[in-house]
Amino acid sequence: MTTIRIRNIIFGLIVLILLIILPFILSEVQLNMAIEIAFFGLFAVSYNLLLGYGGLLSFGHAAYFGTGAYFTVFACKFVAGMPLFLAVLIGGLGGAVMAVIVGFFCVRLSGTYFALLTLAFNQLIYSIALKWRTLTGGDDGIGFDKPAIHLPLIGKLDMFSTPNVYYVTLIVVLISLALLWFFLKTPYGNTITCIKDNEDRAEFIGYNVFRSKLTLFTMAGFFAGIAGSLFVIFAEFVSLDAIGLTMSTEILFMTFIGGTGSFLGPVLGAGVFIYFTEWVSDITEHWEFFLGLLFVILILYANKGLISLIPAKLKEFFGKKAPVGGER
Amino acid sequence: MTALLQINSVYKDFSGLKVLVGIDLTVEHGERHAIIGPNGAGKSTLFNVITGKYRVSNGQIRFKDQDITNWPAHKVSRIGLARSFQVTNIFPSMTVYENIRNVIVSKKRMRFNMFTRLGNIENVNAETREVLETIGLETSSDISAGELAYGHQRALEIGLALAMEPELILLDEPTAGMTTEETRDAVKLIERITAGKTLIIIEHDMDVVFSISDRISVLHYGKILATGTAEEIKENQEVKKAYLGSKK
View 1 (cartoon, helix red, strand yellow):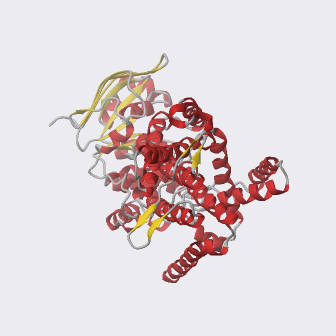
View 2: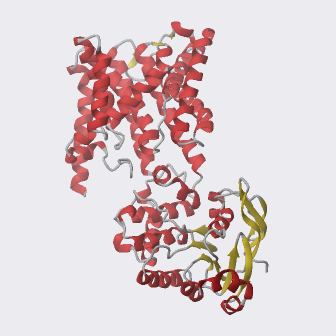
View 3: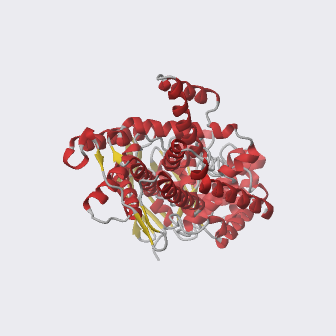
């Protein structure tokens, strides 16, 4: 047991060091991709809280990602001197508030009805973003001046340098993932697993299914909001793309490609998705066709995601034991 | 002292189909009450309205001097009224250990605890092991519940209700689908683990009924035909006509 633990710690440290020195070994373009993978990875993990852990298939998760992005922009626009990390937190809270409102109506339904209602709400929130031009800029989108970070010894770090954006993204994503990993190990994480496995019996041993699911939905919205916030710090600009149904579908793709049965599978999915689209779109403009093809092949032949193709020993590092009953 | 459970003229109909038509039933502290009756008499429906799965159409259910009519299931189970199911209703993908632990976590009101690792909460783990020993499943604790032998699944089914440490336990045909030998073991288990507890049991097997219960109610077309001791029920003319007699 302890040797496995030591091995895991060493493996974790190596990964961490690699992540820290990444800006020195990657080109500017590659580093940009790494940033995208990081925040999309977090977005996908937040989505997998619903899909993999809660067994809830949502078609509208971009609503919270987009809300997070917009809220971060608003926070920086309306409050002078807004600290960067506070702006990120506000993005997360924006996502959470939106999720608690939508979730209140959605989580009492299940299966198809749940999926359709999340879709409908996403479209509703999208229309608000589209029509409330004075606030969101409508389909022109909205840009902002990214706040800099002021550190006691180092001084000012602006967010125009890609490595700085990378480190901010990395720190926020790692903290978020660590928190989520921990939550899933607590009694509350067990509550989610238990409800997914048998909702009916859970009621009869005292679990309030509605409240538990609403909390999960809100938590997923919070971390999607954080991811959206990191997205806008990266892109300096948020448009309707961030909150639209295409984004909701893409996050479903990423999560599914990686695998819903493990904690970090969705991060792998985000990586493959982003690299794949980048690579194929270099070769052909019909990249969406090939993305669709990949998705079809995966569903037919590896419906537990790419993570299921990784040898068992390596899989331990992706947290294979994460959801009980997550794999069918 | 008032009765533990009191059911006053409870009615239940499903879009016109009258399943319960005025049930009156009282269960005292420590009583072991069996409910018998032909298929479709409304026995499971009665359990379902008591435990909050269905809403009553009319009438009142009181437990420990509280009106619990139409309370949601999770609330009913928290005040000391637990049940098992006729069709096995466990957590199939979780291990036997995790199944019981789900109940202990709930009983200790840790359902929303996000600050401690579950594996480190020693008293939860200790209590889980205790319950597993009581129901005789300690050697199967790491097996997924869905893969257990049927007899063991039935024991787990009862264990899930028992682990709540309820004041009143409702068992819905605990021996359903069992062989004669399995039934004998199950009866022994039920007698052992529910000793001294208030119990309502739905059962078809008359041997089981007579050995476990001290009072019996006969349900017939959504009505209580008679309530009494085994002897009284056996002698009751109406019951003979409607139920027991028809078997001979």
